[in-house]
Picture 1 (spheres, rainbow, N blue to C red):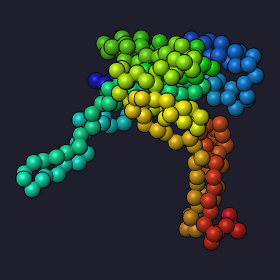
Picture 2 (cartoon, one colour; picture 1 turned 60 degrees about the vertical axis):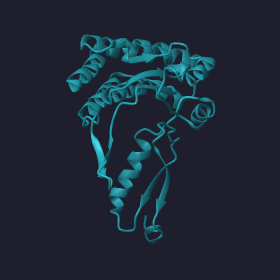
Picture 3 (cartoon, rainbow, N blue to C red; picture 1 turned 120 degrees about the horizontal axis):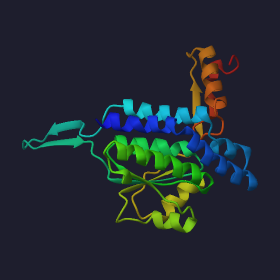
Picture 4 (cartoon, rainbow, N blue to C red; picture 1 turned 90 degrees about the vertical axis):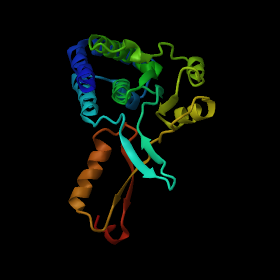
Length: 247
């Protein structure tokens, strides 16, 4: 049943693509006025294909096995006591991220899939796009009979509100920053809520001396050029010295 409910988010996103693009246009216009870099504009920009890609990413989350209740390990103590590790929801997850509207849908889908509620705080550059995506997801949840408040977003994108958000110990169970080194450092230094610290990129590819060189080249080109602006684009290449000259 949870799969059916989550996948409706995908259907809603596609059906209401025009609404998302209209709000995204507002964000782009403001960003251009501010002289935002082309790389940042590319992260911010949505079109029909990108909305479909976001919707498909939601569907990919749906296909994952349900982790809730899974027992990952179990052992028995000499006194007969059995001790195990079971996956359970964290509760209310706070996520702080930058100007990427796709993260709004990704984060919501992942939190819903794992039985968590989520409060999102996206970058000011994408506020209109983010608000519309959350509105659509909330409508989908309501239609599915789930609490529409399971996915919420902060409308105030000021730094002061962000700092307050990091200290909502009575309301957040965990905080996850997703973005550059500056954002992650700010969260780690200022948050009183438990933080899951994420990486900042600097992704490496290693080519072994026994690797298929042509395949390696294809992987490298795809990892860097398919979308250079994202934080998981390849940035470092390591080649085994035995094939360095040939490569």
